[in-house]
Amino acid sequence: MNATVKDVMTSRVVAVRGDVTYKDLADELRENHVSALPVLDGEGRVIGVVSESDLLAKQARAGQVTGVINGILHRREQNKASAVTAAALMNSPAITIGADDSVAHAARLMYTRRVKRLPVVGADGRLVGIVSRADALSVYSRADEEIRREITGEVILGVILTDPARFLVEVKDGIVTIAGTPETADVGHDIIRSVRHVEGVVAVRDRLSYPPAERPSSPGPLL
Image (cartoon, rainbow, N blue to C red):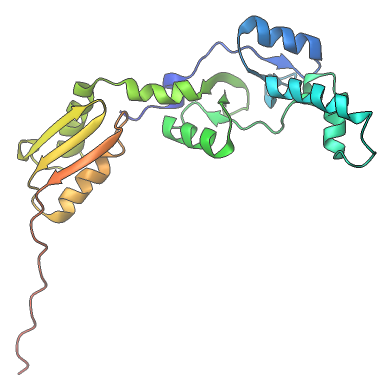
């Protein structure tokens, strides 16, 4: 199973237009128990994201502006301090992801860009859902037996094209232990590499007995 974003995302998303006021943003965040809101243009395309931290930062900056010498605050920060709408407060452009992208890609994107959620957009840029860190981690809730069946049936037999009976595959709490003797060292390495990419696998313990690598034959005597 290669989970995609559409498999784990939330389809019902609270979003706002760019002209929504600061007060209404605060109300939407509080009433819907969310920490951020996608901001849409008139066509429903995502143009930014505004979060609780953006609203709090405005308050912090606003408190500094009157007591700080002009020029100390960056122009963008000054603009944020005086912002009163979602369009002025939001972080733009928004970091988005497609519904058909993998959950693993979503997780990497959230980690590298240091965001807690990603708006999910269609090919036209319109909002279709939202995926959070918790959603990305949901693939690790797969049952151990389900993971084991995928490894033996889809990976070892279906991808590597070798007999699963040659191997003992155990899965506990997402940790996979594989023992047995592959036909060649390369086959063994391919199995371990492929299993690491199975959804829900936390770690792989390689207990394979690798056959010795074949040495190239020595050239015969020169005639």
